Length: 253
Image (cartoon, rainbow, N blue to C red; front, side, top):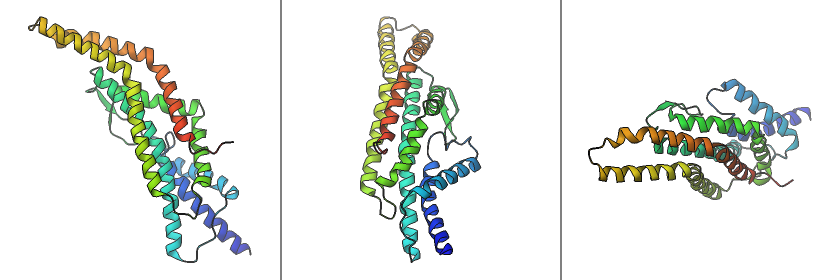
């Protein structure tokens, strides 16, 4: 009896860890490259250990192919949840890149401060770091953990996940990501359009004027002013959008 109990509990822990571990590979704030891999692993193991006793798991399969199918299904669900949250973080980086392009700061590249090491604009890094800080300052990371926990009532362990609906939701989220990015960058786009329109008129009136050098300083000044005025409201609106996106996986209390 003890051996059967231990086997059942180890199998349940394995299934839970497959879903939570794959999700923690992508969750914002937990999967950033500057967080040691051992810390991420221990957090995923601890979270799985807490969830295992309160979840109903399927019985231990009798064949290896069935076990392999269950593991793959759990990993797919975890990657799906992590991808949705990572796409929402990508929205703020896209918005920062658009603002940097409109402010003529797109060529000022720095190391990207996100999960994937690479180059990013300074404005994108500013928005990305602020978003990660706000996730923890506003306890939004609890929403991600609740979504991961309540996913067991939405995607039952032992059943094949609805791959078609999952892909459709990812597609809709990607569409939403670009919409969020454009809305956050809208003030900068409007101001830059007005500046470019004025520069074009001046160029037609005085063709010999070095319009690029003359308009660079006012453009940077106005762009920084727009960012200063709209930054707080844009980030608060973005956090609401993030909560709505991840809150769709949380069961109503």
